[in-house]
Length: 189
Image 1 (spheres, rainbow, N blue to C red):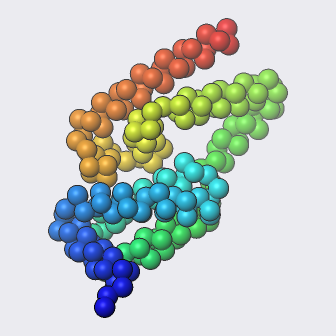
Image 2 (cartoon, rainbow, N blue to C red):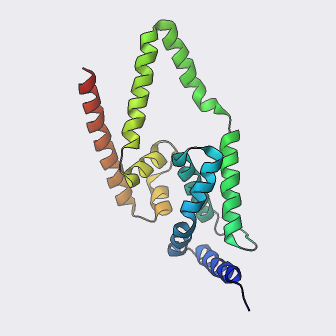
Image 3 (cartoon, one colour):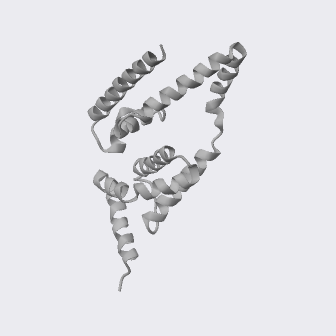
């Protein structure tokens, strides 16, 4: 008699074969099944739920991007957890060079004026608060495009939506951010 885990493994193998044959529905099914548990797992390494979601999204994006050449033996579940772990560890090992120019700028600001540093920190925090308050899909698309450098086409493929939807969501995000920035500047003045 077969165990439930064997049946699931067989189902996952069928799903992976469908993914290799460009079936986005299969990727969506896998995404729905594992996204939340993978996010919790990634968060245990990173301590940042939003970053964990980005890491897991990258894992699924890479799975889709490499679907033709990827060789997975056994169940997809261990593969997904291992890929998530590796992606999180890679992120943590990444040199923090992208923050050096900001730190250099902040040191220059301190040399010029402590007030300038305070204003810069407040502006940066206000900006991040505005981004964090965007609706979920808008925030995800905005972050993928602006922070991760994905093209509209890549985002559309990753999220299984049309490129026009990506453009509309980016437009919505920018309008909301402009409105929030105006409110913030009015409160300051």
